[in-house]
Image (cartoon, rainbow, N blue to C red; front, side, top):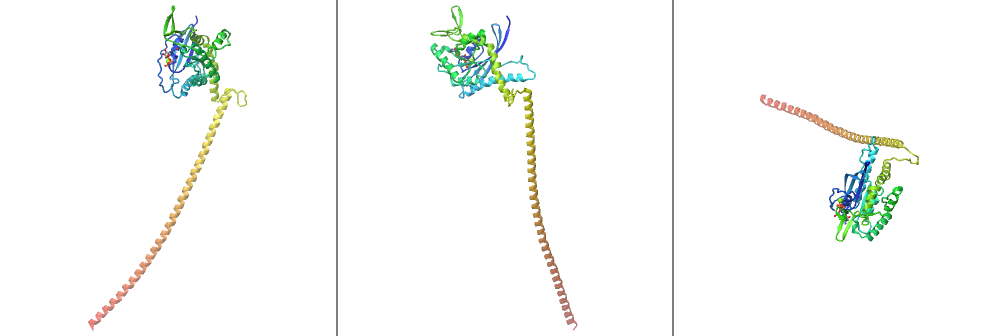
Length: 389
Ligand code: GTP
Ligand code: MG
């Protein structure tokens, strides 16, 4: 038998304790290591684990991305944001690999999410708003398979009503969940009938009981046993058949051709690429690139010009400021010079006055001395006269 290798990623979204881990164990008939999550996490965490499994002749590389703490926060917006961000991040990684000049897509570990199993709480009342909002955010990004968890906690008649209510709510809110394809003749009949069972009501268990001569996965209650793989007990087998066998390839293809394609288109448009120009005429990648490049260069040139102009304005402003300062300084200097001249003139005048006074003084002194001398001569003459007479 030829070995066929398949890589598939399941995203498990749903509130804490809804039976997500138990169902994954039941689906792949194994025991994935998992521990219960607390209800007290401040944010939603996503944990991805990859397992290598053998499913009939398929070597399955299965990645399970588990939501931890989903719906436990007061602000429910964060719950779906984490989910949306994770799915987008995987698309982005793939896109970046694809855009590389030297691509190695065959060796690349493709982590894009192929299916989201969305666990609905078996309240019987319909969907919670977080379910509707989250599924609406995701329906163009991933194949959503809604699942009613712990279906053994709801009676058969209630379950039918619950299913119809959920389908109506999804429809009314424009949420498109994954439909099994009916275009391939070999599976169209079974897929069409399975589409009528969505959302699948499932039961999971890690316990086994003996029924007749067989050991089966089941949940035991005081009033009886619910067998996981019994189609009259729940939709588990239908889900497993659709998910792992019949439609695995279609989900992988839809992920690449529909969801990734949409993401890629949006991202390339965001980057400014388009297949048509403003007049709806075809335009090549090369042309768009050239236009973007020249626009960019033009923008740069414009920025440079603006900066240069700004520089000139600044210099002019500074020059004017300096000139003003120089003028002020000059005026100050002139005033000082004037003050100085006046001061000098005053001093000159004072000096002149003083000199005049000195001259006057000396004149008087000389006069006075002369007067003193003639008086002395007169006295001496008088004395001689009296001596000889
Ligand atoms: P977290 O990872 O903690 O968010 O929980 P979970 O969603 O993985 O749930 P888990 O599989 O750990 O199951 C939680 C509890 O629900 C366990 O006690 C399970 O035995 C029980 N449980 C799981 N599946 C079912 C089910 O189909 N029906 C019923 N009645 N109980 C279930
Ligand atoms: Mg779990």
